[in-house]
Image (cartoon, rainbow, N blue to C red; front, side, top):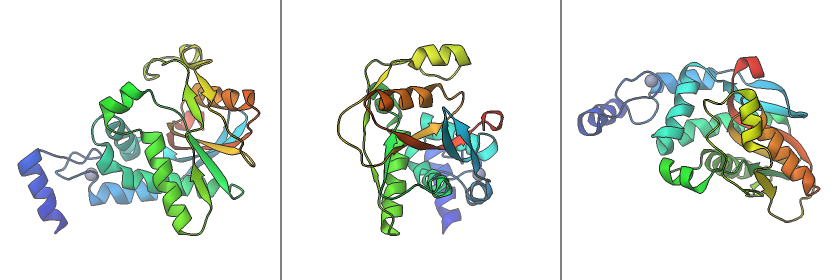
Length: 216
Ligand SMILES: [Zn+2]
């Protein structure tokens, strides 16, 4: 059945797997399996523990890039599974509040999805169904729109996002867990932690889909 769907995908839409370019809607079965075998990365960044779904390389890198650029909806399922694993590895105290890093509205409109928010919402829904009290709140907002961080060096990234976020409002029992798609130099995470701390909100950890190995 799946091969028929994939053949149809190629015939009608020219759709291909972002991992290996064979005809498929979203990731093909082989690439999905490879993603499931990707080892989690645990480390520290911006003074807090960080868990990533895997190293930013190979199929995972292609999947994250494709999700941000053009195939977001088809990739949300497998990417959410990685975020769930990363969250569980962080062993947060429950109830846990996930706060996605805010994405500029024009970027959400271009991409059709808000990757950090959408994977956070899906992962929280699945974890709640499994009996874990995990919720999502858009606690952070952009007070100005930074440039896309891709292509910027470490210092430029820090300057680009410095002071760009603020905490909306509202009390948080316990601490929050920041969710992002990628954590590279940690500039965005540092800004998120700063914005939370400026309103007295503690950040106890962060999760992301992928991190370059050299930064983990
Ligand atoms: Zn593939």
